[in-house]
Image (cartoon, rainbow, N blue to C red):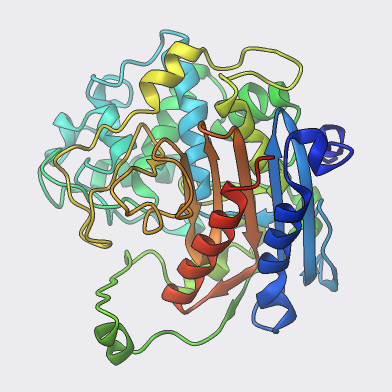
Length: 397
């Protein structure tokens, strides 16, 4: 089970510069060689092919420490938001979902405690008003508990009033909408409507127990920045409460992996991420030419919809399209998780600890990077993502 069928015979066959690709791989390997990260995995694609993929280091897999390969699976955290959103776009395409409608039209149980006015679009844009709504990992496999949570959640600010990153809450509501409109478990929907048509089995929302031996077990690395460090660098980074040690390492638990948190629990290889975004940057077409997403739909969903909003964590405009981030031409692309050399039209989503996936319409390049080493130093892992992405973005031959 791999994306090997999509591997080009060489970077050049995929329209990539071999020397630039090799330099990018050397940069990606640096922290593994230095002993900071236990492992990482990188893939770059163009012209419908994976031009090159590489895995570095070792990880505990199925209880045994062994070298990682291009088929090792990684929890990619909030990269899941891009995948879940793209799956949900298919319901818009099918004419089943109207994002201008309130959520309660599709999930009546959500309409309590002032949440009646929250629209579906606001779920995608992190403007729904319930960023810290609680939903414990131990309940994720219990759908009745999910609905009870929806009923108990309260708004922290009026819907649409401001932007605040919803780490997991909004996407659980999105998953419920998918299930109501498709008649399928949201994990199956992602598999049947996205992964299978694209031919990428290693793109999963939720990892079945029988495949969990393939996961690179997560571990924290490094030391966090002190308050003095952040002050000296002009950083005031306060992450959402859900992003903590217990929650992050919870993704090593079988039941949490299986649940497939739609806002943070996707499991993939770097190659699968690169090929997922390759389909989007190639007009919604699978490698065999199958039209998965219509081009007119992609033009609509991949446009910035958060004009006038401000991201209080990163202190910049959020540049959110319908479920992903757009790099933008304001010089803040690096803060948004892209490289400094991406075009303003690049789109994608990163994940906690250093995961990143994106595509750039200007070059046709798509990229995926995964690691099981969750770096406690937010500034260092952000610099790493920017550096590797910057090198990947200029690999077109």
